[in-house]
Length: 352
Ligand SMILES: *Cc1c(COP(=O)(O)O)cnc(C)c1O
Image (tube, rainbow, N blue to C red; front, side, top):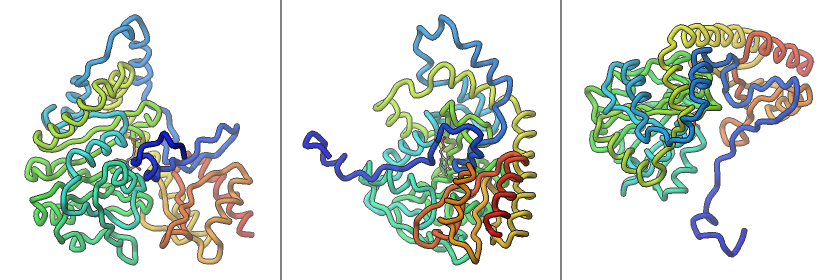
């Protein structure tokens, strides 16, 4: 604390990202990164941008990337907004579309950045409890609100809400925006983007960090009615004209265009997840059904914090949230089969 701080800075409770330790031979299953590298075509595109052109500013509108996303999803570039990771896209969404007199609604167990943005931008919010089985029940959101946001599949539970449930919320909530954060949708969910054509109050947010293996490049996007996109452009152009650099634009375009690499790696992750779920269940874990690249599991006889600490001693890191309702769960990223097997071997020893 310093006397030079503004009141807003004093009041903030910043987000705490999963740690990125620089230890050799670490089995890093704590931040839902993709265990496979990005497409070789992405690397080639990045190399193509490392020259004299870096002298020049990038395209402030990243039109090539908007076109690539639009082509992938069969919408127009006017339906697409792009930003420096979906976290930045989400930040603009909170300020531009979710800050109203009525409270924003989101689940009690969800992406922990949402309450942080509410604190930063002064957005009034209410949490809506997930069911006993950690599901989002659309009926619980049919109350007056200034907006709704949730990840689908949800984080850190991995549970997915079928599109029919999302449509129920959209139809009953036409005076406010419903934001679906699809960071993990490619690992087992169904995207809500086709509903954009019928619901001007739907905004879908996605990232290239997980299913396209580009967490280090920082690219995210949103798809919605052009009126919603215009709000985000107004915020963006009042904040940073060039959120995506030349490398990010070139790499992200190549990633959206290389469907083969995307399909192969995402299917590999899904297959490894299924094996991991089976192996954890065989060790006595209760595992929530996951449609993401992580699983959320608890052991009925062992404390989750102690399990996480014991794994760490063996150079395996997973995520543990000290938070009501989920303090006995571990969130484990799906790694390669070899990494998952290393985790299972360690757990077998720890559990005795
Ligand atoms: C990972 C994640 C994001 C952020 O992704 P970036 O594009 O890397 O900023 C957003 N929402 C959820 C739910 C996530 O898990």
